[in-house]
Length: 445
Image (cartoon, rainbow, N blue to C red; front, side, top):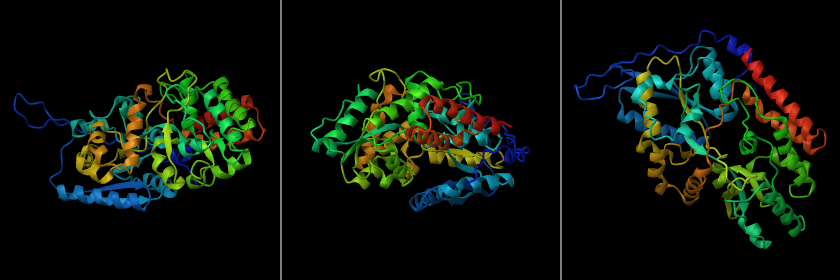
C-alpha cells in the first residue's frame, strides 16, 4: 500500500503548522497552584477521533465515546475508523485536505513523520489538563521527539521468546533459565529439540523479519538503530548487524530453525499458521501482547521468556514498546476538549474498565495496578512478565525518524537473501544500512 512518508506528499503540506495555543491561568485563591492549559468552550464542541482496529476494538471504542459523552454533554465525539490496511492512506488524505482528525491513534513508526511535518499537537501545551505523572519516563519518552511530547503511550509490550512447555516436556528437555540464558544457549537447545523430535518439531521459529528483535540485539551490544540525538541517521554498525544475521544463519544450517523456504512461507501466512502457533517449534520470538493469541491458536502451554543475551542478562537492554499512542492534531480548534478526552482515555478508571488490555497492558502504572485484578489469567501473566523484566529495561530507544516506516520491508528482504545464500551477512549489513539511510534521506527532502 502507499506510504505517507514520501517527500512530495509532505511538500504539499507546508501550510500545516502547530496551532497557536494560549496558556491561561485559572482563577484561584492566593494559596492555590494556578492551572495551566487552554480553557473549555461554553459552546457545544464536536471532536473527530480516528483509530484502526477490528470489530472488537471498534465496539469497545464506541463504548468509550458513549461513556465520555455521558459525562460531558457539551462534547460530541465523531468516530472515524478503519482496519490497519487502509488507515494510513485515509489519514494522509484527510491531512492533505487540511482536515486532520482532532484525536489520532498513532503508531510509533509514523509518529516522527507526522510530528516533523507539523501535523501533531505539542501535548505539553495542554498543561496540567493532561497529567502524565503516572507514566514511567522510559515509556513516556517513546512518544517524545526532541523533548516535545507528541503521543501518550496507550499500552506497552516487550519482546519475548515464547517457549512451548508441553513440547519441551514431551521431549524430556528442561525449560531454560531465562534469567541467565545466552544466544548460544538458545541455539544449543534449539538444535537439541530438532534432534530429539527427529525433525518433527524444530527448535526455534526463525527471527530477523522485524525491528523488535534487531533493536534488542543492537542494544545488547551497546548500539542503537538510529542516532540518539534524534537526527535521521542509521547508527548501527555493519559488524553488529552482520553478527545478527550470522547467528541466524549458523543455527539454521545446524537445523535449529526451519528450512528457509518453510520459514518464508509461514512468515507470510500470519500468526495462526506460524511454527509457534501450530506447535511445530519449541521456541519463537514474539511480542508480549501476542501471548493470548498464540495460546489460543496452539492449545498448549506457551510461556514468555526473557530474550537471550550475550551477557547473562546483566545489561539493561530490554525496552518497553508502546502498542500505540494517543495524539492530537496541531490544527485542532478545541485543545481544551481534546485534553479532556485524552485525560479520560489515559488516566480514568472508567475508561480502563472498558479497555482492559485490548490495546495492550496499560502504560499508565496507576491504571495498570487498578485494572490487573480484572484482567483474564493470560493478561495477568503478561503484566507479571512486564514487571519481571523491569530491572532489564533501559531508556527508550531513539524514535523512528521520518522514512523509518520502511524498515520492516528492508529487514525482511535482507534476511531472506542471507537465508537463501544470496548475500553474506557482511554484505547484507552494508546493504541494509545503505537502503535504510536512503529511506530516511528521501523522507527529509
